[in-house]
Image 1 (tube, rainbow, N blue to C red):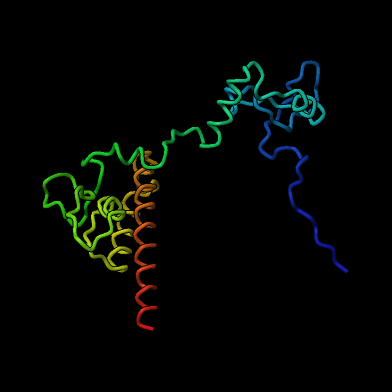
Image 2 (image 1 turned 60 degrees about the horizontal axis):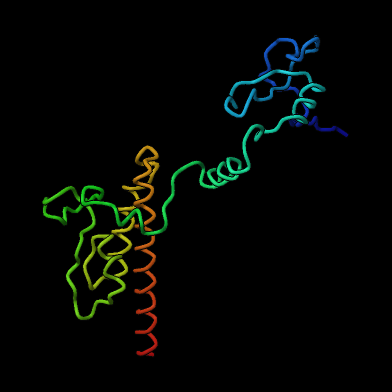
Length: 200
């Protein structure tokens, strides 16, 4: 019976990219196969140790050494959002100006840089709660589900951070677009169900 050789890299195996050098611990001449960051501010710069000494170094490692309790708490809070700024929902969108949007269908008649329209005309049959979501997506009322989906796909594709080099403004705008889309989709779906119940 043939046995299959296990080639899986074990956690305590030496780093295959380790340089051919001795352990950085003073007085140790063992091969250095394990790396450890030099400091909190130099996480991509490493000491190279042998296995016993990297274990000793890691046991004494304190990422937050030298920081006050308040600094530690602030650091942890920043880590929750990947050290990126955040705003309360709706606050960032409220500050966006007409030049912050894209309107690929030129619905603004070229009056400014394309983007969702402000001040959707009021209609007697338009729920007041839908005015802002319609403005955000640059849509009119009445609205079909197909129109909503088509507009959303276009805006989501254009404002996705991956399509804009990770731009933070695009990311925040996409969040507002998602909220507006969800609001309109939920309303249209509920209205359709109500119509089906009335005709049943």
